[in-house]
Length: 127
Ligand SMILES: Nc1ncnc2c1ncn2[C@@H]1O[C@H](COP(=O)(O)OP(=O)(O)OP(=O)(O)O)[C@@H](O)[C@H]1O
Image (cartoon, rainbow, N blue to C red; front, side, top):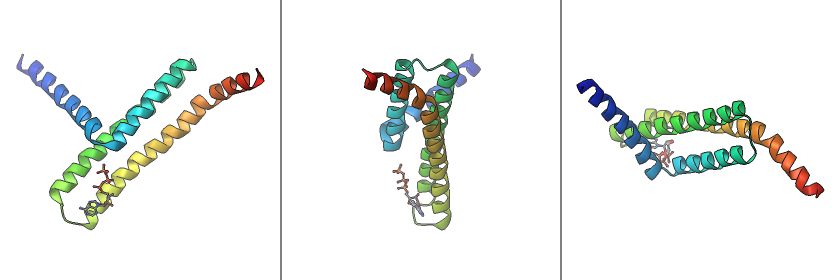
């Protein structure tokens, strides 16, 4: 029973971490907005299941890295409030990781949504 309660509370702390990050981090709010847009577009364009999984994968990757980035920023601010070269390296590298995932998700987005969007556009333009 105790184990079960511990599992539920760690899940609840994890959810609090996600909610708090969405509430406080502008970049996370942008990622969430893009994810909602991408999923709405996937539904509208009737994207095949395999491609929807790719979209979910890129959303999860960007969100996960933004959460790690937020955690690292908080830890660095706590341990090194003054300027320090290593604090800069840590923050910049973590921001770079988010950027890599964001670029990958743009590439996936163009590959998944590009052809069906183009198809819709050509139908509209032909009318
Ligand atoms: N203690 C520090 N020592 C050295 N450089 C720092 C330090 N704090 C921040 N920086 C530099 O300033 C940049 C911006 O840091 P900041 O903490 O404002 O994060 P951010 O990327 O603006 O994220 P957010 O907007 O989510 O707070 C870092 O990427 C880093 O280059």
